Length: 218
Image (cartoon, rainbow, N blue to C red; front, side):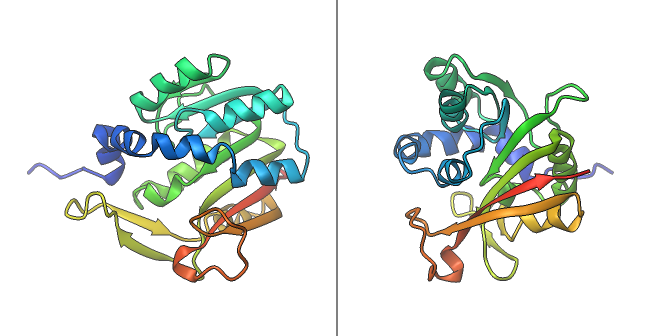
């Protein structure tokens, strides 16, 4: 008997990642001017020597950090379309095509700063802890991890509205707490915002997102 091994990670790998980038590439241009993760990093005046973003789209955030700080910028992205766009725009960024659960980086490769922004809510629950382990693998001891995603009071899941009949979900929860619970990461700061990227302290639960900066201490 054949077993259905399809996960929603494979759905994104099969083409939804490219479709997402095609739908959102114009919005990404606007985000470059008012990016909450960049605002948080600027607040703390972090100047990492190396930065990795997992799920980096076309690498605009890594490119901007490299411009500001001189850091070596590496971007991992599933979408071929996003990587092609990024390589044309930001030739100083090193791009790799790959998944969060199996990072295409050799053993012992670590970074001073790792960014995972609005990625984990798409990861199939079968693979979530594998992704957490892969992310932890590439954060240097004493380095920083920036996690951004939806931030409801209680974990929730909703149908992914672009594929409502495909069984694909968006999983909303406080992902930073997974790393904090390991007691390997210390919270530094969290900024919450609404869908317009306003730092709104009264944003409704179903519209809240958060960017959390953590420091790794082995």
